[in-house]
Each structure stands twice: as structure tokens, then as C-alpha cells.
Length: 169
Ligand code: FE
Ligand code: FE
Ligand code: FE
Image (spheres, rainbow, N blue to C red):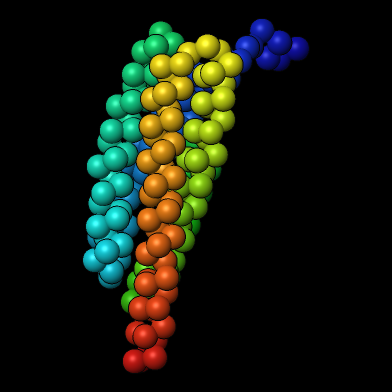
């Protein structure tokens, strides 16, 4: 049967490759989103998270090392889809007052994907008795959660601004 020799270790390795691919995809997509938005606060939040993402990639490289594998990504269709949706918003809402709200929502979808993946990977690392790996992944998870929270805080201002711009048109 396919997969009968595969273990939780293999699943953990696969999950790591998935999120590694996703983080590096985000490193190319997020700066474009930062450039596109009108709100300086939102741009600053995106730029801050680009820096954090660079650190997250390095932590993942350490986790690969802990399990004796080269850091290597595996195509994550979920992140490709989310990035594609963001690109659609950038095209379709380019000159719209709603652009920022759309990109903020897209960014939060990405954070939620990451939060889901890291939560699972941490549980598996703990099960596999790899507390140091779990701790590194927890640091990434904490940053994703903080980012999600600060985006939620910004959302109200961004949506208000959108309403005001629309009223002024
Ligand atoms: Fe991340
Ligand atoms: Fe994925
Ligand atoms: Fe993130």
C-alpha cells in the first residue's frame, strides 16, 4: 500500500517543506503588497513582517538541520492560491479606495494559513520529542499571531479610510 512505510517523522518533514516553501513565497509577495497599499501604517506593518519572515526562514533552516535534512521547499498550492488572490486584488482594485482593505484581508488569510500549519507542526514536534524544534516553530507561530493581531487593529482604520475616500469621490 502506498505510504505504509511512512511515519510521523516523514509527515513532519513534509510539513516543514510546505511551510518553508510558503515563507519564501511570502518573502517575494509581501514587499509587492507593501508597495501597492495607500496606508502608511499598513505598509509599515507589511514591511515589519517581511523582516520577521526572513528570521522565520532561518529558524526553519535550523529545524531542517535538527532532523538531518537539507532545507528544501515543496510547492504549497495553498500559498500559491492565496498569493494569486492578492494579485487579483492588486489588479482589480488598483485605483480603488477599497484596495487597502482587500490587501489587508488577503494578508490575514496568509497569516491564518501559517498559524494553522505551525500549530500542527509544533504538536508533531512535541510528539516526536523534539522540544528545540518545537520552540523554534513556536517563535514563528507567535510572530504570525502578533501580525494577525496588529492587522486586525489596523483593519478598522483602513476600512474607515476607505469609507471616507469613497464619500469624497
Ligand atoms: Fe511566516
Ligand atoms: Fe501547504
Ligand atoms: Fe506571516
